[in-house]
Length: 388
Image 1 (cartoon, rainbow, N blue to C red):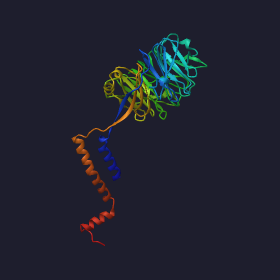
Image 2 (image 1 turned 90 degrees about the vertical axis):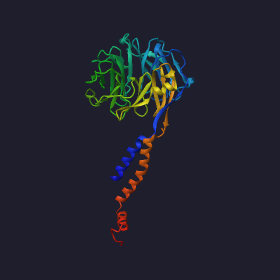
Image 3 (image 1 turned 120 degrees about the horizontal axis):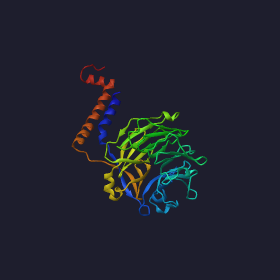
Image 4 (image 1 turned 135 degrees about the vertical axis):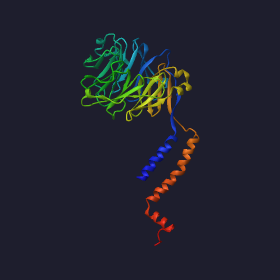
């Protein structure tokens, strides 16, 4: 017990002296073209490709592992001029859905780089579609609209409008990685859960905030997370048996900085990378239900003011703090971890010296206190006991 207490004390004392982790930046070759305004992107299920969408019918494929290699790019002709707002790969990685303005419910096919309207897209009319996501089973996808409508889609049924929707813009849709349950965020009417049967349930107490993004990053946890204005985030605890009984956790507010949440990308190892305007990011960890600073605007500004003046369109990682970001104007920046060791100040030096001196003494004392042999020898040396 004494040994355990010593270890805890030692860790507490030396914790402030541990090195801090920061990220560095390296410019990659930018995407070709002027006036790009990339709205969204997603890494393919196999992790090899990234499909980007944006203004004026923009659809473009880049390599996820070598995003700066322009020889691997595929410029895809959508034959459309409307803005595309979101993209979602099917779990099999062969096709992807695209949501856009003017009722743009489209499907991209990897085999021939073709884009066509999905079955039943005509029922949407000219309504602006803001988001889309496939659920885990790959049997059903959902589209969200600016007018609050939510549509389900599969090839056999086509597009079907769901019941019990509200009139507030759908800002994002995310589906659990293993369960056929999805969550929806809106500007004014809170957060909703869509169950296996496509029933929509609105979660109590969530309509007080403007929610801008949702994510379900970790398959081992039965929860998702929503990010809102005022730098608020809240976990959504999913009831797998009865999704209508899902609840929200405690609401937390990011205290660092002053920028606002605007979107989210999938991070490494079951985390979310949340974009803040104009150019910052934080990492959300499902296990801790907390956000931690990932990329500070001052660091980006000092690296390249041109990058800092743009917006993050997508971030992706191959390791913790090891990945890339692409801006709305097509600049690609490599992000990598940098270990820094700050010099110790006077107080830190005093504390470190005290720890270095006291810890060995405490260890020796604990050994003595737990050794009857040493205690007996000590008493004999002091004359308290006669030698045998």
